[in-house]
Length: 154
Figure 1: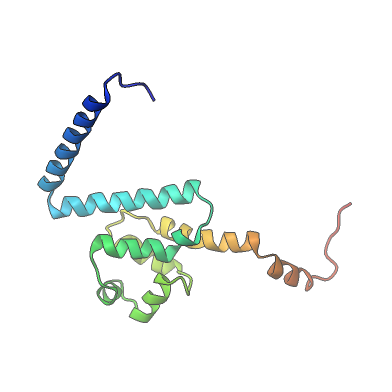
Figure 2 (figure 1 turned 60 degrees about the vertical axis):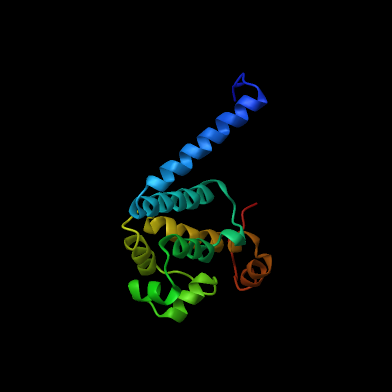
């Protein structure tokens, strides 16, 4: 970063002025514009997590779906009806108890008008599976025992 060359008091005044201008501009936004901005922000959060982050349980599929419900201001039962899903199934998705399927990823893409893609929703789901494959040594050893006459290269 380049040095800004201003004193601390000047910087604080400039920061305060910028903050006031941002709040003024936010106040001028319509609800539709605000919703769109929040959806774009969530989309970038998902994409950044998928691109740069390793799997972390706090950023699982259900956590991002929960954030989505907050952004679109929907109760679980209302949202479940809107995407033609039983409320208990939605609850299981939110709590990461069941895996998402492809048709659900398509519905989750359609609901925000395509802003968050089905592939992003799907990749959130597969990131957990990938982490399980990489780290579940007990399952790996159990399944290896079932292989008879595997190929060996020396």
